[in-house]
Length: 427
RNA sequence: GGAGAGGUGCCGGAGUGGUCGAACGGGGCGGUCUCGAAAACCGUUGAGCGCGCAAGCGUUCCGAGGGUUCGAAUCCCUCUCUCUCCGCCA
Image (cartoon, rainbow, N blue to C red; front, side, top):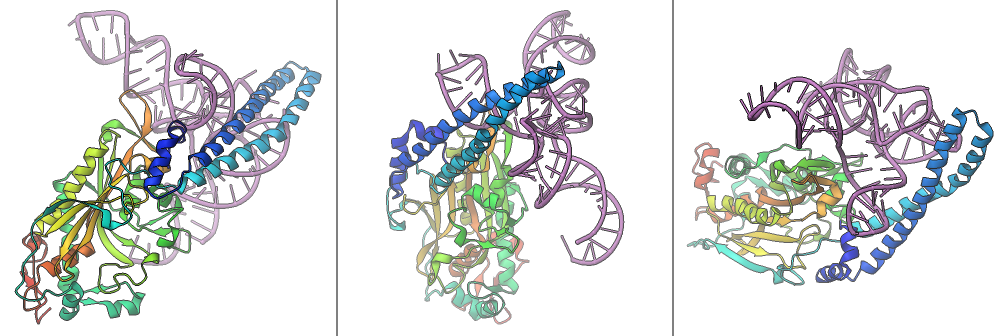
């Protein structure tokens, strides 16, 4: 959501930013609505001023026993009544119309974000590690998992349909181990506070982070008008909605390990094999709430926190800056971390770290009080730290051995009960 | 699920339908006093929107949304949340 006053002052910059997103100029329409609304508000307020004054005089007149004088005023106010009532309805309509227009517009990218139409135009930032060498043809994660009998898509389909999986034994344990490692690093070393939030939320929360109203078809909705979160970003970011935080509380850093649910409405036919794209997956999410001054530095910090997990696991990865065509709805700038999957012979997204400026804060009405006592909107950031399902995939493919077993990375040893490999004859 | 009680400012807590953005207390902030501090005393302390360079003026907001009324924090309806008791339950 944009600051309408900023659009008033910078209509060209606003349109230019939208143009980079491939959208047409909108400031004309927005400002027309804004003008109509302000015009209307002024007339309405004048009427309200007159009504309030007259109403007070009625009270005084009655108190002093001047019933005739009171009656004159009563008649005057009665005339204003319908005008004010209609006026209030109209004001709400104009406000809603303006908001409907603004709420569907994506955030503006930073200048430094590269222009582009698709992920092909993302800019490589840096690469860490090297591709592991195999003296055999590395398998894809689902081949490994199914051969081990520890990853079962068929049974999952019986329970829930396509795009679900059942993990068993050490496979299930490794998913838990990965989450545990991530949470431990983020809470003990990176300054994040662990949170266990609702994963079923209302429409306001989803609106706050920008999934609604535009991306309803990507979400799962319950029968009582709640929604399964597509990411813990929703729950964690909305923790500060409708509040005014003391500046001393910022930056506020929270993390949560939750399941995430996505309808994958537009992804029919994509990544149908394996665990890459599921309706349900688990993720450790990082969210930071900051002042406007802190947010850019916080993005770099958050990226570093996410990268740290991959380094601990010894996984080869690269970081890209998403171009204007690939960046998410609420983001001003996004880093994707892509991990190397030898079985797939390609890099795949495993984390996405975004700075949203005050875009979500305006939708949530999340503010803070600065040193001078001024109230202003916070900035919000979110990032995966990491997507646990995809991390599991990466470990499987990178740590596989010629005999079809998988070596447990050293960093996971404390969480795996001492086993060094798994997937052999005994599971 | 049943029964009841409530949602007022940073917190506690008043508020016969009229001059209430709201008593009073606490907290915070500023000041007086003091060598300094405490105590005491004085002052100050909500958010949104509109107009304005600003000072400021106006307007809206007492859980949310409707309604009654010339006028609603106060009356009515719906919703929502919290608390207590009972039932059920991981």
